[in-house]
Image 1 (spheres, helix red, strand yellow):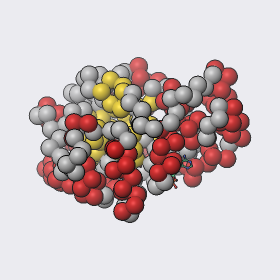
Image 2 (cartoon, rainbow, N blue to C red):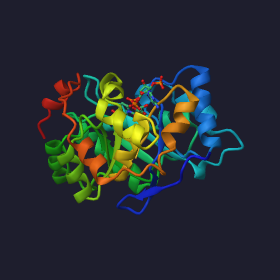
Image 3 (cartoon, protein in one colour):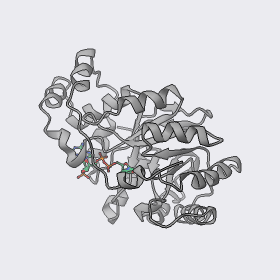
Image 4 (tube, rainbow, N blue to C red):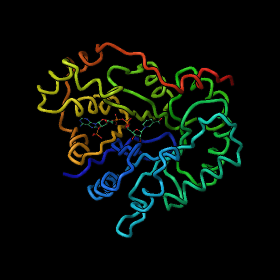
Length: 280
Ligand SMILES: NC(=O)c1ccc[n+]([C@@H]2O[C@H](COP(=O)([O-])OP(=O)(O)OC[C@H]3O[C@@H](n4cnc5c(N)ncnc54)[C@H](OP(=O)(O)O)[C@@H]3O)[C@@H](O)[C@H]2O)c1
């Protein structure tokens, strides 16, 4: 089986693959090798970040001679959630280090990792990098509805992506709706919920059995059908492949209604503290 090739168009006409590989906590050699296997199976989108502290190792993989850079869609993120205030120079330095580590001359997508009081300064650099064609698209992560609405008013170039924590028990309907209404592509992380809680959900179990699929595939297909880019992380190769094998699962209206009605959870995230301090 090959990794499916289906893209969404960002509002600047750049195509983003709808299935990617998450790389957070992918540090050991055998796990890193999964990225190699993923690419060899046709996988394109690799979701990296300065914060993950593994970009140099990923760079060694993606720069191998048999891999063509143009076949990949490399995402990275500016780490801006430390307490110190980032200057534009700091952001440029981080970007240069990211390119050096990933052994690439450009990124397909560069994101702000967290909304905080530095976001506008960071964004100004991202806009410059975009205008100078060092990155093909720019976006944000973890922006809530009000933060995103305000941010769009304050910046010159609207984010092309918002990458957010998203799962059937935390579906963030209003935020997703707003992003889509404003031509902002949503990428989802933690698709099984906090501590993979959704693996124990009886409704999902029933729907997964009905379609001869797994709960993980059911969750991913549900997001995929809503035009959300998914990029599950797994340290096990059979899961990487089964998570990608979702196109033939055809969730019907009744399934979708049951999933939509799953009890919603409020998720605590330590970064909330920083997010609440934002005043633009
Ligand atoms: N922008 C941000 O702030 C942000 C934050 C967090 C993550 N991300 C990105 O999103 C990626 C994915 O997010 P995530 O790692 O938080 O969560 P995730 O993709 O929801 O899942 C990771 C967990 O699910 C398990 N899993 C994966 N497939 C499975 C399957 N088929 N059956 C059972 N368990 C399965 C994994 O275990 P095994 O490894 O044992 O399979 C792991 O425990 C990250 O790697 C990162 O690239 C972005």
